[in-house]
Image 1 (tube, helix red, strand yellow):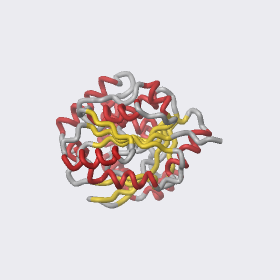
Image 2 (spheres, rainbow, N blue to C red):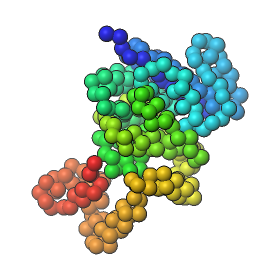
Image 3 (cartoon, helix red, strand yellow):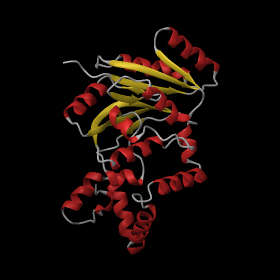
Image 4 (cartoon, rainbow, N blue to C red):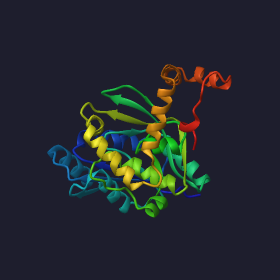
Length: 282
């Protein structure tokens, strides 16, 4: 049986110094049917442009375009792809050898699954692991926990309209996952390290997360776009209500759940502590 083609789409803006690490990780994949598409999103760095020009000359598909932002760059790559499945890989990250094989196997066996994602190991400015956990729609509605480095069914991407090229970059993934989830598709989590996430000291996301004005702007954007589904005010009021009702016990509960999760579950099973299913419901 012929294995379906997987298109690895790599947007690149002034990240030429990292791109070979990403390419090397793809070359080590155990899955044999992969195409690579690099989108140079208007890089202004001379080194990046020279590296990408050399890669194009070597035979790798590299698309040069004016800067369109992260969502626009990914969309360009998807439009030029031939794969049944898409893997958006940031130019400074790396994937593990078995990621695509495991994801494709699940996608081929489960037609309603649109997204397969896994854990990550951080490297660079920080060490540690990112473990998003099993999919939960209510949790996703409160904030994104799934990285862009996921294998996605291309037909679903086309159906929902690809990435929203929003003015403030950095939340295109959250928006995409919400639209896919609201259409009723399934997400599958592989509880293993499937990619390596490079932490850069002065990255775009760090700056964005520290900017209160932009955080407020993003929340307003999402609240308006999904007015019939996202109710930030209700959730905030619910949290405040619980804290006011019994601040000491809730502070204890939060501490136990976050730092001693196994002990927390044992207390829940013995009805010694409130679970508050608001945050666990799908």
